[in-house]
View 1 (cartoon, rainbow, N blue to C red):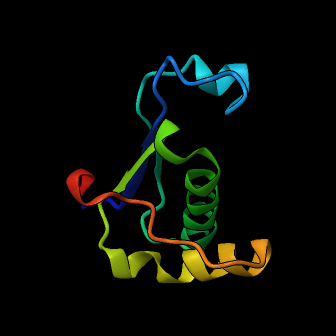
View 2: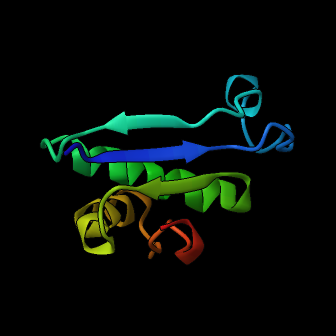
Length: 92
């Protein structure tokens, strides 16, 4: 079984939230990481993007919350502040 992260931004997201390429994308985008070493970087990016975009982006994953710990730590280290798990309970 694969291990994949998904994200989707509503087509009507405000222009000041994302560039045109992302704003016009209503389809679900995915990154199949298969828990390879780069997974932590994909997770860190999704954590940072969700933090920046808030409700204007939906993030979900095949993994569990504990699979995100290292990626959240990486994002916190880079951004210099605490961040939260970006997958909402209803999206799991």
